[in-house]
Image 1 (cartoon, protein in one colour):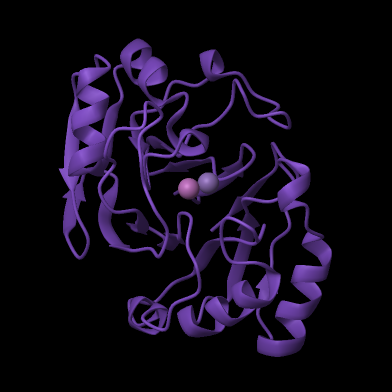
Image 2 (cartoon, rainbow, N blue to C red; image 1 turned 180 degrees about the horizontal axis):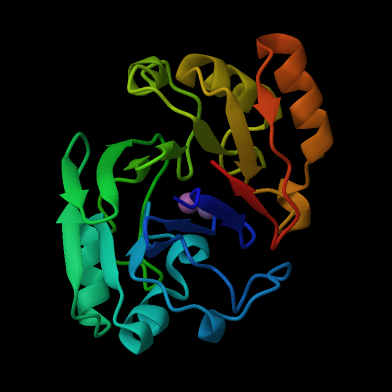
Length: 228
Ligand code: NI
Ligand code: MN
């Protein structure tokens, strides 16, 4: 069996290939100054959206409508996507799990805000646990540090994807504490170096993570992949 792979497409956007399915999280490509892929090159089976902000949903509707992808998100984000013309959606909310063909998705809390690109109500922001055939991935979405990450950590996380850019989300120091709460042995940082205001040193994050927790920081370049 091929291992599941995680590819960073810049900002909070990741492509996960697992068990014969491709899952795209938080697509933000056309207006992302550091993106190396165009949305036209992607043909995902599923698109998962953590919240409604434009830097997480910008390319979702065009990709879903062209590729026939199923959009999985919160109730409010799914409603908005349907208004854009997306026909296949699966709405979830915090604490809810659902078994899809590729694995189980569970939505968690995130401490942030959420509005849609047109300013309409976007519900509550979320993080996402993906329980896949060969491991569990946690994509934290956009969030501050919060102590209930310890509860999420009790689910058993193999790889956590955490924002480190500061300003809009946790910065480097809080992301190290988050990794500790989550007990995530490997951490992929994201939501940094897209713009000057969220400039961070990924290697400095990995050093600090190792020093404080002993956990491994997986520092990807945009376009690079790692196996679970
Ligand atoms: Ni956001
Ligand atoms: Mn964001």
